[in-house]
Image 1 (cartoon, one colour):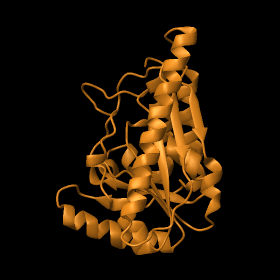
Image 2: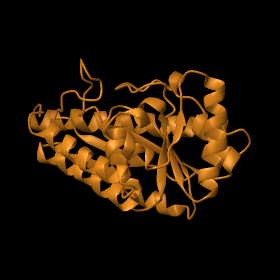
Image 3: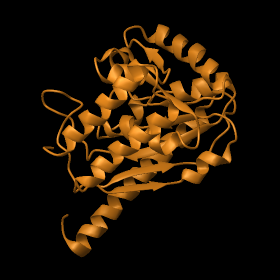
Length: 245
């Protein structure tokens, strides 16, 4: 943490200054995101990313539907997705209002929800999200109500499916395990970084939404659960062979 967070703050500060000047574009976003990834690698965090070719299976924009585990994916997903598909996020109001990170996030023209009125948030996501998708920009959706190291399907709503259905675009399921970046006791976004925990991202094949999307929603959940279980088994097998990391 002593070496990692100063790197993060410096990267975000530089990005924020460019964003305030109106000089922070998609390439800058991908580059600063990659700098965060390298900062994590510099302190010993290992990454495994699979299925990136699946993003290229659909020529147009898609809705990425992912579980949400930590702050890490907010910082690192742009450098994975942006070079392949122009993208943005659905984010809560608090992120775009932050003093330093806020200008960076606002520059990416996200879909902003208040998390106060669910009906209003749904309307905002469907209307504003559909406009961005129609303009060729993909959207990352975290359907969980909050970040959590455990995945609970009961808390994984159908927001991403509804958006894809309205916009007439495919969904790409994303499974991630990012608990190497822990939650802080004082500031939730800045907790302990555990280099012994492998960071994993997996991208599934695009799925066209049929009917009301119930089947596709269950397939996204299954994709996430299957990958989380696989990564857990791999770590357990590795520990049996080499001992705890």
